[in-house]
Amino acid sequence: MRSINNRLMCLSLSLTIVIACFTRVDALNLGVSRLQTNFMRKWSTRRKLSHSTLSIPPKKNDAKQRLKLKKCSSQTGQASQLGQSSSKYMDYLDNLSGKKFRSYRKQIKILAENNTTDPLTNAMDNMLTRISSKQMVADVRRRRRCYLSDWTDAFKKKRQVIPAILFLYFACLSPAVSFGTIASEITNGSIGIVEFLLSSGLSGMAYSVLCGQPMSFVAPTGLTLAFISGLFSFCSIKNVPFFPVYSWVGLWTSLYMIMLGLSGSSKWIRYCTRFTDEIFNGLLSLNFIYEGFLSLRRNFVLADPMNLTMPFVALGMALSTFWGYMTVTAFQASKFFNQKVRNAIKDFGPVTVFVLMSIFNLHPWCRKFGVPTLSVPSHFQLAGGRKFLIPILSVSWKVKLLCSFPALLLTSLFFMDQNISVRIVNSPDNKLKKGDAYNLDMFALGLITGAVSLVGLPWMCGATVQSMNHVRAMTEKAFNEETGEVEIVDVTETRTTGFVIHAMIASTVCLLPLLRFVPIPVVSGVFLFLGRKLMTGNSFLSRIRDSIAEKNRLPEHHPIQVMNRLKMNIFTLVQVMCLVGLWSFKNNPTMAIFFPSVIGLLMVIRSFMLPKFFSEKELEILGDPTPS
Image 1 (cartoon, rainbow, N blue to C red):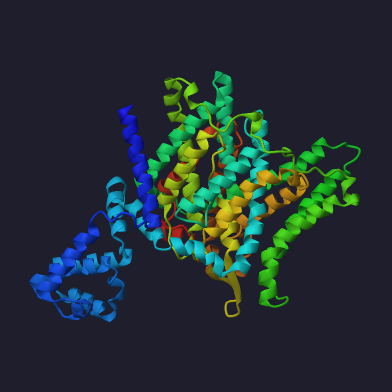
Image 2: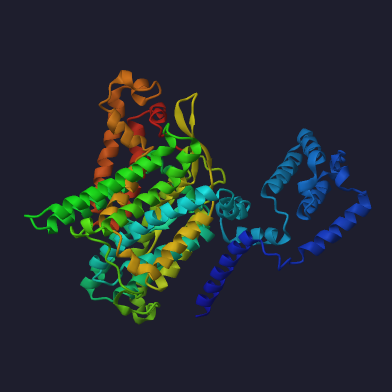
């Protein structure tokens, strides 16, 4: 019991350190300020040095003491005011001979970049360095500098932020409701819509506060749902209580992910190149489109063969919603009206289409067809009327320990899904400026996974579709007359939108009766739009189309123009075969639990097999260079 308490204390201390590094609390100073004051008094008396004398070249044997003074000045807030004299002093150190003087210059540069002017922050950085990797420390320092602006930047562009929140609310609400409906069927009502709404909202709010990349979202995914389905089937066969096993698998997964985050394991994601990203991206696109058409197909299967009016009306509503979304989001690049009007239509258009289609279904002319609407509970209640906390002590120690093995598979799934999703968000094509923090994202998701496991709520993971739509909704574009293309002007990187969107999703449990008026075909249309939108910019899918295109009609930099068509088609065919394999593996209920290992196989194919058939120059032409 004492060892367990010690581990809990270490984990609590780690969390406190990370949170304190972000909030920069000044309650503790650990005696650093007093030492700084004594040190400054000593050296100002001995050398009569001040802020203005730093530009005077010191003696060679005094360089180390000047570095100490420089550090003290930086920590007391004077480093940001040195200006030109500090620059001259650093230039002087550059010209000195000897390795130690160059090391002094390097230390001063690192100190200036980290901007560690708070004594508490310095102490916390030192403690964090002792318990985590340098990659994790670098993530915390990188994102700490812009943490405040992550919240305040949203208030500078309210006209863009407000419609983005409304659009993404429905875009994130639709998968939560859909996956909740599916989960209720495959778990015999153990987990339903209310649980998915709560978990999506609360997890998203916590992630927006703790994560390193606020432009990425966590949400329910089809891969996670497949794992839950396999776990429920296993518990039913073995006659083991589902929720205690579910909680212990989640707690083990949380521990693994926290350890992965602190150890800096996300550095290995660099071997996941564009080859894997585009296949995974294509899989998610096809999954959303498949789920949308599957819902529409269900209307034809359940309808009376002699009267197919309702299925065709539902199909028309879904396609109208899809067409409306595509039209208003692309209106920004059109030639009609002025830029201000085009931006307004692009921002508020998706929400308007959703509301108008829902109101249209309430019209007496449309209601007579009986188009199905969302089936949600009439009041807030967990599935089966169970309590929030799961009795995790109701199973034996043997079961608790055995849960660590399926947790390894779930951790692999989360590691791949989360890192690939965030990697796609951090793509240079999106022109984000504040930097990435993969390990901090993993650490935050580990904490969230442990919390939702204790109360039996569904696990959340990185959601590529919702994340990319968040990035695009916060992106300002303009038409470049010189190049004739639409280019990205600016991206508002903020945590406020994610927090507000998921707060609205969590509060939707208080508006359950209103969700009954939303037609299912409208939700299907949103699914079709999200899947189609994610295909934009996927060069793998573009190469499938261009494989039969005339060579003279392609641009000069196209792979077919630079290398022969056969080589490009072989590379594309390998990706198609990998995508088909992933799709088949995912849809096999008995094998879905091992899906993470198949994703890892893509990295093996790219790193060890393709270089034998393609030169590095050819891989660069195909946009997939080998990572160094």
